[in-house]
Image (cartoon, rainbow, N blue to C red; front, top):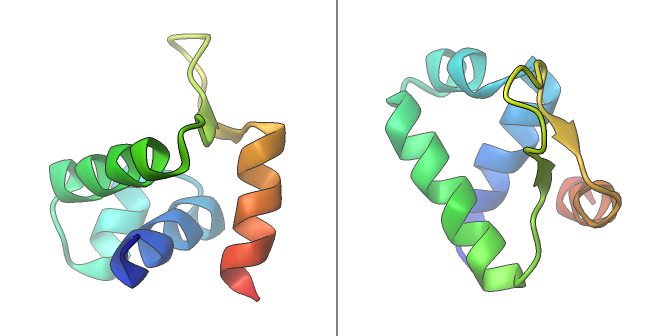
Length: 73
């Protein structure tokens, strides 16, 4: 697990989405998305609920909420 991926997670949640997080972090949107997918693979669980195509802003899963709390600590 990379600290950078934790920063991506907290930025996406704090700024309300991948696009805004990428703007604030001065990184491309695909970089953020790839990092989040790598984090989910590492955890073996989804962090965001992607069940709806129009799921805006992204919603954390229950596991994602717990991990987010851990990440900000």
